Image (cartoon, rainbow over all chains, first blue to last red; front, top):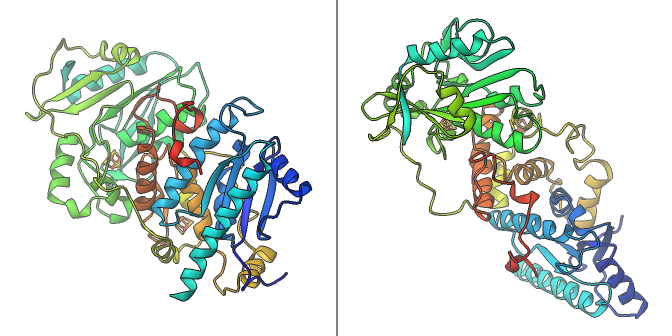
Amino acid sequence: MEENRDKGPEIVGFACSYCTFKASEMAGSLRMKYPEGIRVIQVPCSSRVDPAFVIKAILEGADGVFVAGCHPGDCHFIKGNFFTRRKIAALKEMFKAFSMDGRLKLFWVSAAEARRFVDKVTTMYKELKEERDAGKKN
Amino acid sequence: MQGKRIDREKLEGALKGFLKEPGQLIFGFGRKGGLVTHRMYRDDLHGFSMFNPYFSINGATLFRRVFSKDVKVLLMLRPCEIRSIVELIKLNQIEPEGITTLSIDCPGTVSLGAERDGLPDDPFEAKDYMVEHRDGMRWACTVCRERRGVVGDLGIRMAGDKSLWAFPYTEKGKAFLATIEVPEEEFKGGFLLGEDKKDAEPFATDMGTFSSELSRCILCKNCRDMCPICYCIDCLFNGDEYLPKGDALLNKIIRKGTDDLPEGRELFHMVRLYHVSQTCVGCGACEEACPQKIPLTKYFKGISERLQGMFSYMSGRDVKEIIPYLTFKEDELKDAED
Ligand code: SF4
Ligand code: SF4
């Protein structure tokens, strides 16, 4: 078990195996860089993500979680990601009620969008890092 | 609105008529010692109570997983119980074919823990009692979202002039109403119980407050077990597999450089908060069941109303309304996308 006190934020990402997960692999093979603290978990569809997974990740130490799937209309299973959007939107609303907004993101990234994947996760990482650094100062 | 002006005798006459048919039952309330409890009636209405001023458990908890199509059951319960039944029907946990649901105006209830025997089981008398003893009412009832008998197949309502009325809301309701031997007439007066006003501000809290309120939680999971709509046989929290322990426990402490234990209680309650967010009726059965007297209703009601509001949904209002997580619109919720 490595210590992570001084490293950057840790982000757990749930990525659909038909699109975002492919994009993350492509980003790797194109040698694009994204921050180290991002751990991607492959799921068969973004709608497989029970919000319980997200809550568990956050409460057990992740600084942020993203759920990512194919753009609306492009779901491999036709309509999975529409359900994802409803569920994650509601979960975000719940996080907002707990004053924890910003720790959960919903991305649409197709298999061809390696650049978009890197941009999205890097931006999220930076935001969380800034927040964390600001918190340390106070 | 068309309805029937009834009284206890007329209603009991119709209920007795219902029981005369073979294979027909009534699930309602009855006196037991100084208390009133849930009761199933088969042959006669001995000890029948129209209303139950004591909230012990939500009657829907007893009634879920009723799949029989041959038995006909008339359910005469409080609005929050009928709303739970409606949600369970949507979730395929109750077969609706044989059941008729009747909701009765509810002036509020007291906790069984209040140890007050001999409260009235007549809705008007119960109403007077609750007005006089408002501080004895369960918190859930003081903020109830729907205490009117306006849900299910038919409703029994208290009019302002102290007359009792029955109104049908569906074909099944009409069929039962037809067996009450009084003519239908137009209702013109006002009701004793009005519509409840909505909270202006959406519920909000923070993890610090939530954690400290939960610090007395012993994770007995009674709250889940007594929740009428928490029905999964394979709950994530059966056993302790999903709770942080062992390596997961050390992991957070070592990796994050914190000495806060991972929040198992918060995890259990937040997952449940989310899972019941569209179906929670805010009845407060969880809080009744809690040996530690944790103010759970505040969170469950607050979060569920906020999340139901996103979809203009209200749990248990109408059996034809689809639970929001089970449907979608193609063009919606753009601001949830990052
Ligand atoms: S929550 Fe509402 S319907 Fe249920 S017992 Fe209380 S007042 Fe009655
Ligand atoms: S009933 Fe009370 S003590 Fe038991 S798990 Fe629920 S909140 Fe915790």
